[in-house]
Image (tube, rainbow, N blue to C red; front, side, top):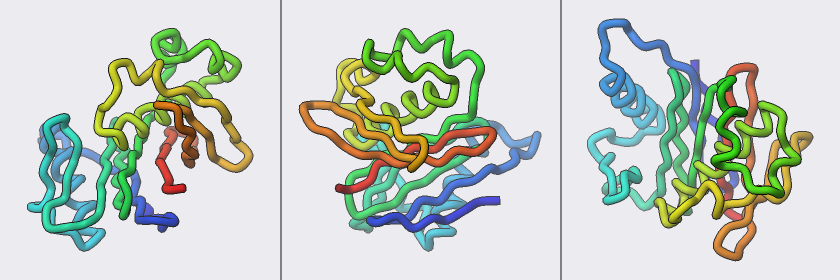
Length: 178
């Protein structure tokens, strides 16, 4: 089961996919991404990767970002550089939060908050194609609005809004064009 959601500047497709036991993990990931590309009427053969591992669509003016986590997949296609991250909820996230939380972010300490913050930093990292030396500390969440499913982050002297979706099993965070 998957969803296609229109955003202000593109399309976000995401969902949960079961892996056949005989299919290797990497083959499953590739097959699922190809399925999602087909669902957006894109040719999977046009998918390639840049020097830093960022996905690129040949023969297409759109930007693409891809994420997966234990059977959950997200693919974000837009006219602007973008980033998406999907993360299943993991109990061990709080144990490693000292690696990615800034002092200011420690006020948000619930397990859901930690997953949102982690995924927001991953989404910005993907949008910027890895242009950080320590992105987990160079990107700061400055506002977390769970009522409206959005947050604001600061990096490289600029501020950006991101949106997120929550389910009982995962969080999905994506950048938007201001």
